[in-house]
Length: 261
Image 1 (cartoon, rainbow, N blue to C red):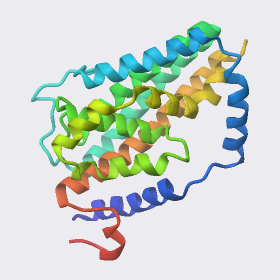
Image 2: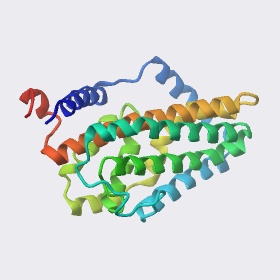
Image 3: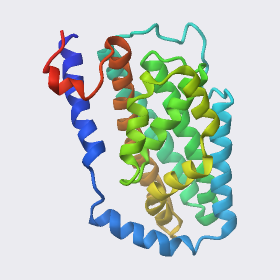
């Protein structure tokens, strides 16, 4: 293991600790309380449109939809250089944050109805970004099990504090999961649960987007910050899988071994 990969391994240790021990703060607790009150003010048709957008996005991805062109020339033979993949991620993320912010500003300026349109549109942007990241780290998104892994990364990025550890374990154990088990997971994904977890995570920021006069500014900020959350999680998730696939490492063993040559 080269020096850069050792440093990444230490970063992953801290990330694992954050996933395990992070608890909701006062702001999170307060926002959840207000979410429940404000949720009832949104028309049912808006909620239905949001849920439908998630279902279509998730189903399309599992069905083989590629949001980016993929061929043998585009694929990076595994293992690519980890430092090189990490170097290309920040500019890629910046591009998607700007794209998401522009989309949020446009729909935020349109009030409640366009805010409903923004929800599935942002899902598509995020799924496209995850496909780009997978290719960057040498994983073939034409494989259905890899597309299912993208959904786990998505869920982890937008987990509630109560479900974060469970979602992290799914990501952490994916390299060890047998192919037939991966297929069963793909077939059993509950898209409604997927939607509810995501909705709860983003709702406070997105609800502010419907406020008259400041919707565009809030929409841009919300989408930009949500993409940033996804980018950090995606990088660590694919770093973890990279090291596991290349060396057969498991996160709990890092501290016990101290270092691995």
